[in-house]
Length: 184
Image 1 (cartoon, rainbow, N blue to C red):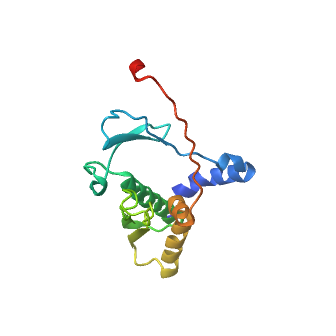
Image 2 (tube, rainbow, N blue to C red):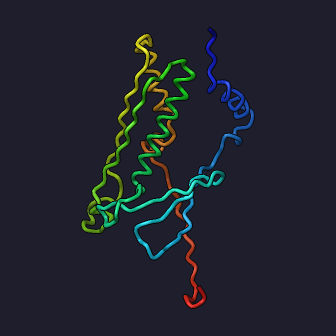
Image 3 (cartoon, rainbow, N blue to C red):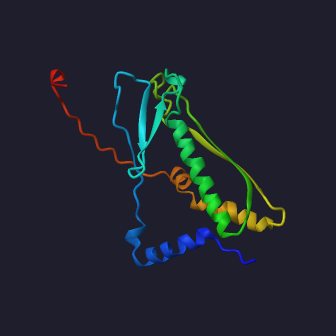
């Protein structure tokens, strides 16, 4: 039986196009919140992806006074890292002709909330550490060198992991509009 990689079949024309036209490789992922029920400080929803417009409920963690009845922004950050890693792993395994029998990817983010609550100005307002636990089950005929190549390539190809480990500038553009509350 001749093995064909569906990932390679789909990516090859893209690769060829990106070599000829590097600008075509630039994409923009988007999430938008248009505040509804603004009198509720503990809940909102984020519209994920301009094209699909997936509305996803978001809550606030109990450690900062919320109910933690929906995923919070830290959960979403962990979800982004875990999902990016796992999808990269699947595609690279497909290209390397490695059958995956089971995957478990667990992303964690640790934060001292005293910073965000302004309890202690010396505590940074950020996640102090993040972790990624990866467990995969593959056929025992796969050589250790190939399995290590799979993990290394996945780490190098995971956009979210690479963004978090390298850090990037984030530009914040704020526009404040004023209105007479009697006109709302």
